[in-house]
Image (cartoon, rainbow, N blue to C red; front, side, top):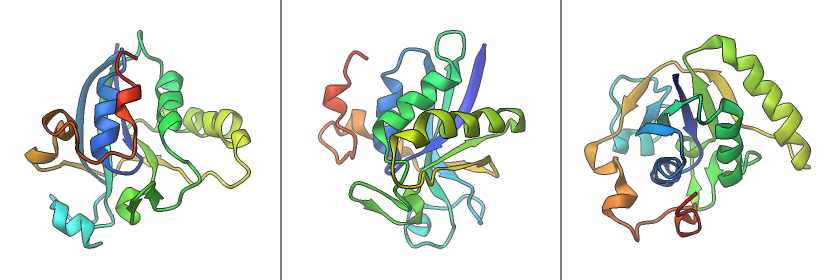
Length: 164
C-alpha cells in the first residue's frame, strides 16, 4: 500500500537524494510546504515572504517501509533540536517538520518523537508536526538537484549512504 508524507529538514536537495536511496520510497518531489502565498518562487521563500519551508513530498510503499522506519531515517540526518536551521542552512525556510494530509497519523508521529527521539537529546525537540496546509512543487532545476549536480552543497553526507 502506498502512503505519503512531507518532510522538512534543511535544504531539500539533500533530503530528496537521501530518501531516493531508501528501499520502499517510490517517488519524491521537492517543494514548498505551508506557504502563506500560492505558488511561491524560490526567491520569495528565501526572502521570507511566504512562511514556507523547503520540504520533500515522499510517496512510499508502507508494506516495505513503515512510517516509523521512515521517520527513524529522517531523524538520522537532521538535528531535531535546531530551530530554523540545519547545518549551514539558516532561516525559517530550513526549519524541520513532518507534515501530513492524514490527521489520524498525527498522534502516532508525536508519540514516536516523544518516546524514541526526544530521549536522545538534552535540548527540546522543535520539529513541527502538523497537517499539511499546502505544498507547491519547487522549480524544475531543484528537482533531483544532487543527481544533476553530484558535487552540489548538501548538509547530508550522501556519499556514506550509497546502497542503503
